[in-house]
Length: 436
Image (cartoon, rainbow, N blue to C red):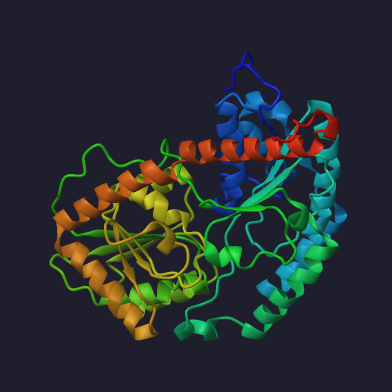
């Protein structure tokens, strides 16, 4: 871990990572604050973490030597009651009502803890990596040090041909309310820097935000976990496709199964589906109707290490998602040397091009199914194409999306906002005289 003898200067970042949750087990956006904290400590940067207590045992187990730098927010009566009520409500309604109240309660506790730690440890920059939604309000303001938020990634819509999959009225109402709510909880309006993954996210920032807006990709890859096999030589047997993700409507696994049924190669390919969710039962029934029982396997939820192992054993990843803001699994597959077939919509378009994958426009339901089937057929029939795309994807991840590069970028941003705050605090008498 960090070297206690690391030389420190007056402008060296002393970073407080504040997040509602952090977890390797749950993955998704929850893993982002954890990676910031552990990679900063590995570099010898003075850093602390404030996070909800629900993952205390997991995080301390991962880095027991850093336990004194982790501060956990207790599960309150409001958090517990909100969770109980939210389970009975539709997902979007829960997110914007009782779950929102729970998040605000946690953020109030986090702000109080942050103020105490800033004073105790001379912290000079606070970083709130999540929630990644650009419209989600923040209570991290008035902390006397610059606050960095993000990278955020959002402002997603469904492709026009699939818009019926979302309650558009609820979506419009929630978006109209965000500017008002961000005035009540003005953390984003007062932040020193707002990090956005792409232009569509930039356009969704609340009106009146005065911090510097910086483009930085949301996701990164831990190359120690996600790596290619030592030997990916062509092998006999069926082509092995894999899907990783939650089994929910917007992941469009039902369309993937329709496409997979059309892939006619010899020998027939196989498909492994990693993940759980409310659609699993209906998807298993669909597999039966399509007569794919011998070629499709549902493997349920797996740890990151196990997912990485199974990616190394696969030949290609398929991600047909219709509402994917980030798509970290695309980067993880690329890091494992796999080509990717994905919907040309949202997050995957930030990572993929025709040098390392196949993007399928979601022009209609039939066009997406046909395009995915064609992409899978091309890869199944051409081992050399798979190898070439896989190598290019790995190289791209190494150069642009690995966590070491991401930490370099973040340290530069921390120093930038620290220097800007110091210049604002400099008394006029200490300022250099104007040139003549």
